[in-house]
Amino acid sequence: MNWLPFGRETLVSALSKEELLERLAAVTRGTRADGLPELRPLFYGKVGDHGFLLSRVIEKGDNFLPLIQGKVEATPRGSILYVRYQLFSTTRFFLWFWTGILLGFSLFFFFLSQQFLQGGACLSLMVVNYALAVFFFHRQLVPSKKLFQEVINFPGTKAESSRKL
Image 1: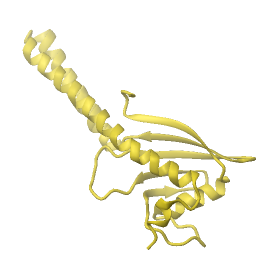
Image 2: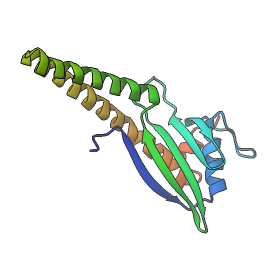
Image 3: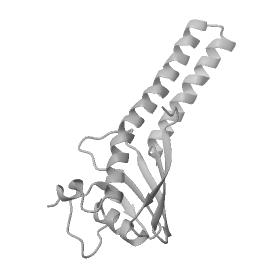
């Protein structure tokens, strides 16, 4: 398991760059490709000429939902996607903020006030906070990756047809 709350991968698709971006636009709220049937959105975000910025549609809010950023490059036999999964910026800010605060308190208690019990408690809270954030991020990463790869790799999939209005 990766101990950082982000992931990267390079994917190869048999779809052309234009087809791939159209498929993503068709299942993303806020963008719609002309000529394709109206589908219930699978993602929130935006799809541009060279890439996309998406997050999976969920029914209940989750701070650790991954943000999917990608860049698409055309090849003679399809396209290559450079995908990055990361936490939203506000979640990243609070994760690093509380990690820094708790690390600062633990250093203060260990070195300046010589209160090792309080320093150990702050250090333990910092580790638990970070470990839980990474755990919850990776728990949401698995279904997001699966849905994203299903949309880009398999034309006419069950996921797409079951979401028709």
